[in-house]
Length: 300
View: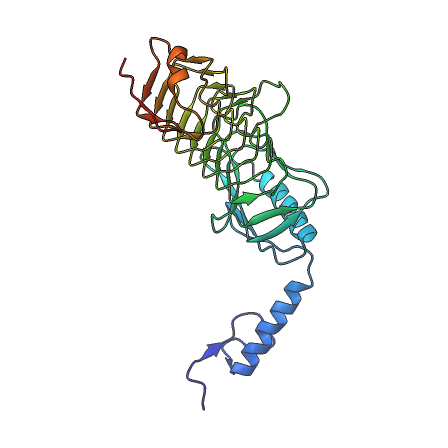
């Protein structure tokens, strides 16, 4: 069968400009290009404001490509009106030391948006830059490390182990101000047992002792383990709203101070009767229930 399509050469190549190529010649050209690219150590697909890592190598090769791409992104001197994105293909990444996201306005995101960027090995990711967007990264049981505050940074669909997202098992007073959406951590996560959680948390999951000793943010549809959301004797600040959240036993500060609003929250074990004595004149407990089920509505 004759070729129903016509492929013509351009300026470069072994054939003169305008010469018609057969399917076989075209295949050979593409195969030569593909094999030539595969012999090079690092050729990222990039544009003026993005760079893409395919993640088609070993975990260590993928990790090296990510570090190299991030260093390239730094050379563009991004700004708030001219951000740069490092796009990560689905796959496994491994580092010889923890990878530090330390430059503002460079976003590091999974191409799909799912938790499909898996950080293997013993090293993890640390975020120390404010005003970045981090999405779709799963560090497994390791600590997804962030430094204090970072009020303009957004984490979406990320996952870590114990003490992730600014948590700690020590009495370090982390203040966590970032925005977290669909993120998951282990015990002592999201400002942990001793820190202050003053960011915005939506659809997040933590283990025991999560979501801060002082709650001063907005919490929507989040779930913590025992001693979460202020723990046993913490403080729910006046401008704090905890709505549609679930806590384990001794959560929501039953022996501390409730100056903010608990709305439609649930205790997995216990009930909200002890919380009444923790209410200040500004605090409210609205349509909350415990186990055994008791509904408490306070419209002060």
